[in-house]
Amino acid sequence: MKKTLFLSPPTFDGYDGGAGSRYQCKREVKSFWYPTWLAQLAALVPGSKLIDAPARGLQLDALLPLASEYEFLVIYTSTPSFRNDVKVAEAFKAKNPALLIGFCGSHVAVNNEASIQASPAIDFVCDVEFDFAIKEIAEGRPLPEVLGITILKDGAPHFTGKRPVIEDMDSLPWVTPIYKEHLVTTDYYNGYMLHPYMSLYTGRGCKSHCTFCLWPQTISGHRYRTRSIPNIAAEIKWARDNFPEIKEFFFDDDTLTDNIPQVEALARELGKLGVTWSCNAKANVPYDTLKVMRENGLRLLLVGYESGNQNILNNIKKGILVTKARQFTKDCHELGILIHGTFIVGLPGETLDTIEESIRYAQELDPKTIQVSLPAAYPGTFLYNQAMENGWLAPDKADHLVDDHGVQNSVIEYPHLTSAQIFDAVDRFYKRFYFRPRKMASLFFDMCRDWQVMKRQLREGVEFFRFLWGRENAA
Ligand code: SF4
View 1 (cartoon, rainbow, N blue to C red):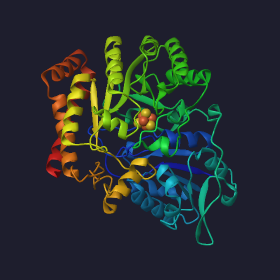
View 2 (cartoon, rainbow, N blue to C red):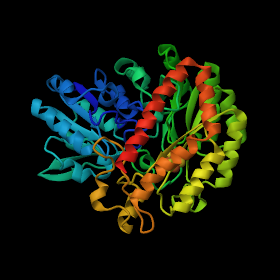
View 3 (cartoon, rainbow, N blue to C red):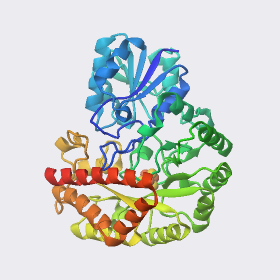
View 4 (cartoon, rainbow, N blue to C red):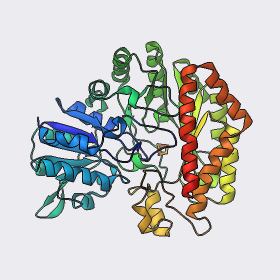
């Protein structure tokens, strides 16, 4: 095996752009997802090292001395951070010219030719599902013989060919022992999860075709492939016993509830283990399934509502009726399942009126917490192509999804709705949702019940106000 370093590279301060973040940016409150995609690689390469620089607060200077200690460096990159990550690769290569450097992630999978030509420091870039390609390279297989990568051949980009999609998800070794060896669990925050939490996947892919959604359209696909229940339960049991500090496990599959029999069976096993858990869900889970989940330790669902306007939901191919989402939310409230609802302002079809409709819809649904985002038009998505074809995304803005501090930029605009109006609406949405007497009283009540919750929510409250303040000044 080559001596291998897996790196979530250093970038903007507080930037949640590691190998587990779907939409890379600095968030309203400090957040970091576990770098699960890189941990999966590290689990396949015995003796390797995983460093999550943003979560650890490590800068390039602190990492460069490692360049000479390794033979192989794998960098997980993203569209907003790609230029920064290339500079990191160049700095490593300058220190150790013999270092083999590969990039992985959706950005290089969809822009393989431009990416391999971005710098002589990059020896190859990966296609989608790169796990076993990286393993073969670490084992010493010559690059031209490894399927699923792009290299330079006679000075021109050369794709070595498609790899078969992974069907046996149990063939992927567990990531939690890698977390144990290389990560610090208290580095990972999320405004709506208990702290410290732990996220991992039980499968890849999502059946839905939401036009803005990055992973299913690039690296995970539209077929939901899952690990077996005994395999998942055994890993959670191991993690429960080896991380006594973890208060909650988060199953970060694109949509864990896509496979109802599987999620019910998983819930029953988790119930036996006595763990608290949460997951991503679409707003269409039947009551009986929610009940099984709740009775077996489910605490919270992360639900992408996106908009309260049915036409917009249809425009983005969400495959959800607002009537269904209302019923689902009512069911969750009845069962005591908390919801972190995510919304996007500025999707195709948006107007000032539909923004107002979404704000009222969010107030009516009243999830525990919300996240309001700008549309992130990532290369490789239907939304990106649609925006480019219709002139909604100016070419000079396509490269600037985040600003100089890593905060998401408003890059999409329509003839009837400017990017500034969309940007302002995020602020308005948050204020109208949170600054209601009922919501503030409920958050205050939570704080009073638990000193740890109070400390945390006060810190997050300060961060949140700073974030809003920064947005107002930037507007
Ligand atoms: S349901 Fe969620 S994960 Fe699936 S495509 Fe839509 S936004 Fe993405």
